[in-house]
Image (cartoon, rainbow, N blue to C red; front, side, top):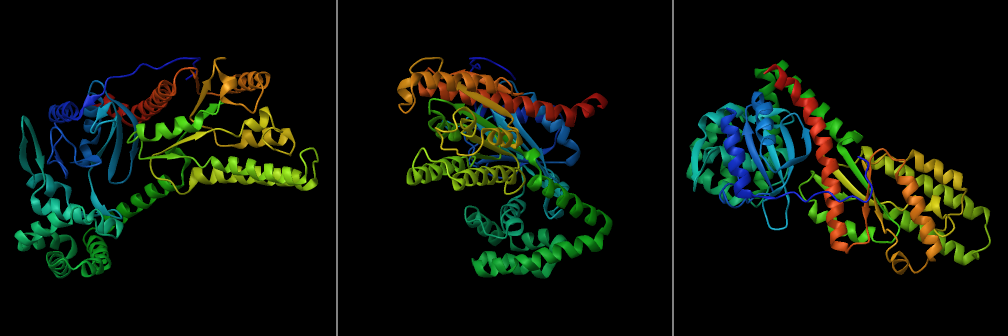
Amino acid sequence: MQSDLSTPLQPQVLAFREFITGLFYALDEAGVRFCVLRNYEGFPAINLGGDLDLLIAPSDLPYAIRALRSIQGIRITGYSERSWVAHAFVEGVSPEPNIHALQVDFLWLLSWKGNAYLPTETILDASILRQAEDLSFRVPLPVHEAAISLFASLLVGGWLKEKYFPEVQRTFANDKSGTIAALSPQFGPKISMRLVESVIDGDRGEILGCIKPLRISLTMRSLLRKPLRSAWAVTQYLAREITVRFSPGSVETVRILASDGRGEAIIEDLLPMLYASAKTIERSNTDQLALFERALREEAQADGFNRLTRSDFFVSIVKVLRWLLKEWWGQFVGKKNLTLRICEDCYHNLLIDPKNYWYRGPKWFARFVGELLPTPDLWILLDPAGDGAASKNHELSTAKIDVQVDAYRSFVKTRKSYIILNASKPLTSVTEDTYLAIIDILAQRAAKQLRRRFDAFADSA
């Protein structure tokens, strides 16, 4: 995407009621058998959870995604698959005031490390019809729903989620024998009874003490029953997790260039606006460069501004290299799937005006390191367009600001994907334009990914 001083159009936002009605209708029309796993008590007006969890058969995933994409007025801004779930991040939905996106998860395997703790077909077959005003949908049996709510944190994460515990406790107490019978095929009657009784008693220490025996029993019983299938499921799970956690492909990066110092304020306002547009929305640790600049400034003030020492020279080089390594480290380690990183790009100030940013190393070296940095998915230049730029940066003369702005324009136009926005407007308007530019690039990338993943299926269907 290449653009100059353009403003994306503001799309309409669907109310949650309208979205959920359209989605359920589209799924029914596509013949997708599904049930809502939890947090449906406020339907159709309110979504009580942070996302929407729908259980489907694994063979129905292409039809479910097609149904989701058929809803008018929404855009999928992110899509990722794991061995048990497909995450779709949908923009254009307002589940809460001031929220413009919703995460929709299609699950086909309720498992730990690839081993199912409740069979999908069993849950779907036993699901019950629920009516909420004029909306009809299916939900799990109370026993199944309670077990899912408990195991989602206890078995998978190793901790107890208190939000769901009172309802889980009531359900287990109301149907103790039914709960034990539902869990026994996967875990065995002994550990199932121990878990159910500890939940009914509210003994949290005993509940946490069940985690290891539950995991061992589930793994061993799966291996003994279907050794090849179980081993393959675990392998798929591990391979997918490694890909997610150590591949740069699950990171989307947006760098914002602002010569007038507005980038930081805009990013602060952007983060809540982008909620649910990706799995994780984070501000990249770009303050490393600010800390670097401050350290060099203090050293320069101590030694005298006009005196360049060998120490200044090597400190500049070492700190820039350290920042480069941290940027690449963040691409591979310590992230979730999908991660959207928003950062104000300060680094290229070193190329435009090295002395002003207290960089004491060679300019060619800074330029070389700049070429080695991870390539962002989108550059956004906030162009002051000559309106009031001098008043926003009192440290620089008007002539220097003009040089900076021209340098930014020249730089960003060499990038593969960029957009130039008019930053002379009020801050709120500039933030909205920036938000829409980010959503546009995310939607374009997600659309390409979905075409690669599902269009071959559509052609053969």
